[in-house]
Image 1 (cartoon, one colour):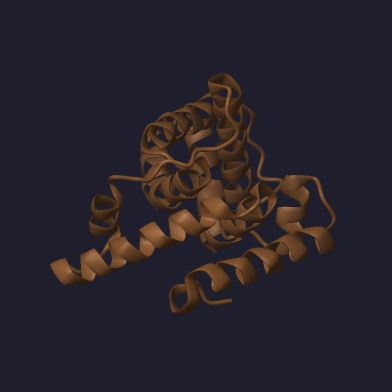
Image 2 (tube, one colour; image 1 turned 60 degrees about the horizontal axis):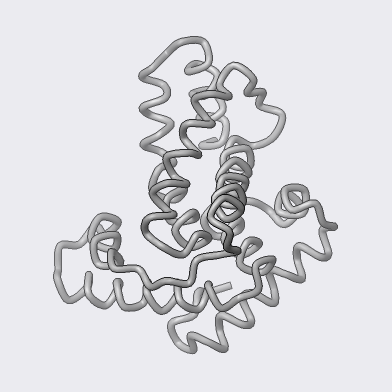
Length: 188
């Protein structure tokens, strides 16, 4: 249902409805930002890639066709923007620690309890560090699944692999994260 709504919003935006873009942006900005943050690995790269991604969405609005889920299209753009950023900067992936985890946790939290925010921030920092230790292919599969909401078949399509390879990468990512994080590991 949400996917259809996103596709309809994008089509309305392509037809000139600016309010449709505002709604589309609000619906997708947080999960997209988290996806890019965890893929890029540092605050400056995250901000740059996030802006570039939305610029490409705006620039590609006339060419958008709802042949696949909107999120699949959006996260493919984000992934390509990350790859472009890494090529331009001459490095493969970011491995710097984030200074803004507490701000992000507070912004995403429904709670205003400082202790809950601090615990969430610490867990988020541990997860980000563990994600950066995963091989690139596993990290991408995991983030496309968790943050992007893509299915295994969609992950396979977006990464140019077979479904079994995508499933394998996802399974290995979860296994490695459980080993690294113990009790704080994400649930299957």
